[in-house]
Image (cartoon, rainbow, N blue to C red; front, side):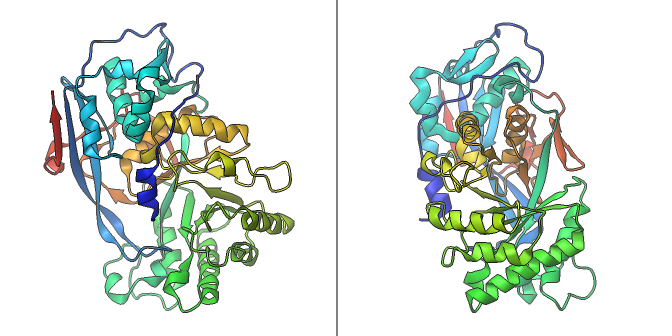
Length: 433
């Protein structure tokens, strides 16, 4: 079963944090307008990446083109949107419901799901992003203001566009934005040059994630390991010491888990921030040994996982320790769009109790990025938001500003994203009252 199937099938109970003061000043009990959900649409937003998606540990070349499925939930002339995370037939049940009544309120803040709708919202998963967008627009308040107390004014954003560009075939290298002139002879330079190109983009990110785990694509695991090490060293040499790097193995070290420690020790970079999903999290003995080895070498590199599960790392693994006291995992990465706001708040609270931070997974989704920004402003144990170079003409994110590697809200209500109708495909699903 692959990760996408696993995420689609995972459901669970939803709880959420009772929070403090909101992002904007509280005004007492919220005055809720009369709303009923009258219409639901799903429409694809076609897009294109500025650079092609090269292979990663499990998937081959995927090119430039990308689509984001947009869920649109209407209450009269108001609408809320999100990346659609569920089968369309489940959405039909929303027609006629009052979106305010789906949630339990504490004044002008949402504490969690209303008890009578708890199971339904659990099944809807990330649809609560669109529902909170709708509610926020009705109240003329950003989603962050509905979720909790502001704990920071801005959130860091990292770029996850660095794949295995060294494995691109000659016909896949045509017109690469990051290669000017003759192609380099050293394959690692393809990734290093792309890293430099990413740093030059307008968002100004200073945190880069690099895909590793080439065993599927090379003659031997040892050859793949050698290339993984060489690529990370080449990127570090190109970008300098001040840029934060971390790596994502996409479970590519599953056949030889302890090679994750070999990789870290060979790279020898004390500023390698984290190793994500090197092999499945149920191999706790191997993970513990990896952590012992890298800490013994004086490396502070963190272990991250969780994108395969709705809600992130399961509790039985989240509570694992490697030395009797410190958590085995350092960063929990529930998928933003599959998990949604309420379950992610619950996951963040459980993570915090175990000394773990959160950094939601978000592949090829700009709506997921914008959703992350709101949650990151009110979540104490937040790390950063995931972005990439995908571009969607249908999205006008006037409520989110990304500059110098950090994102801020502009004060726009709801999610802060408007749609350009002419840039959307025809609806693939429609439900009406």
